[in-house]
Image (cartoon, rainbow, N blue to C red):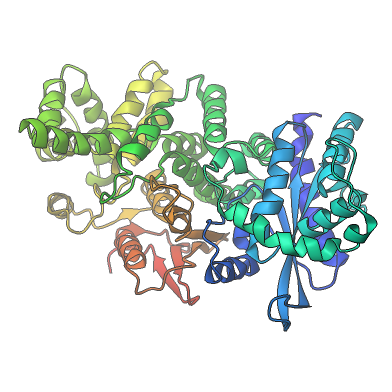
Length: 599
């Protein structure tokens, strides 16, 4: 199967299947992933109320969910109640040994929502699939009560095998045990006639067995972290030169149900190699693993992901650029690729340094361990030279009306600015500035033209993107600097790249795994913020973020709202186009934060 056809097959097939399901049975609702289904959220809550302890994770690699409601007699209370029945569609393009394990696991794991007759699983293969794949999947389907459909857009799906819920699968197996793959006990007819009652009796033990499971890993269930909604934006790109390649990569990842971290590494590596002829650094990806362990200790603020975060920032910004392409400069796509994929690269240095200072201070009484080392190498390792690049560009962009002002020994005139960044580097090791210097080091062998037009603007945007550096109200040092330089706001028209990075970086709060252990409620905490949509037209660019568990009075909501408020008072939208981020709380109350500059 050609990769060139993958985007068409994946996205077109899932979209067609979504439309077909709504015609298939009356009242069916469809969702791209379980996390978007309010019925699923309700049933998870109900399951917990009756004692379900094992956490049900909504971020499974399910391609489509069809939900229908039915009135049934409750087998415990003997009263009618409304129940939701879920059909899960799982797109498959190639065979692996994990397929059978995963689909069986999903069917049993998710059946704990209410009972074993609530969930059915259907594997979906594209119409171009080979006969070998069909035979392999048909065998899995028949042996496990899983459905198998062959789908071609605009045609009715070919139903090779129809799905069974787990209870029905148990009953049928009890009545008519298969001879293969394992020989099973054949009971007398008198016992087989009681299969429904016997199955219902054993259902309780099946549920308890599932709740007792331990050591289920993200690899086992195909855990997702990157929001499905943000990935779907890729298929809506119209003008971007990256659209076709990115659609192929995303479609392949969704079809293969691969690891999100490896997917991001491959994608950024591919783009860096093709666009700049450079190797994309894996420093952040490799460094994150020990940080998850170091900061998993009880009592500390847990470490949260910054690697997948970079990719989701990239996709959000690319979608905005694609829809507002006439507003941006010609180099913006390449600049944005560099900026978004590198902006938190040095975060482990800042975090580890803060931890190491405490360690050396408590154990050896050495409080300045890290700062002393970096001061020693500040000149020798060319940090000062690269910092000169940043300060020069910052002054030209934001602090000087006339670029000719920066002549002669201009750095001597900027001692205050040099000292400000020097302290951020040596005392705090702030990830923004270190990431920026790291980028310039990586780009030192690039042609001068690319360095000046692509990497230096990106380095500047990275250096100033975080609220700790540029727009945090309680940072007295920078507030004084802003007042002295009369920098009241960062205007979109003056520095599009820095504006876009600050905007997207603040917005991207969803799906960021933390270092908390699975026994805690870390999955729920990762769902405190959910990307809902991005609306972009000629007059407005808005990002809507839901907080399904938080009210506007909750502390976590307030902290994010304060950050967005500070951002809105620093970033200034261009005339005729309003940038804003909207937080929607649990009560569906929306609070907009408009990038309008100083009030």
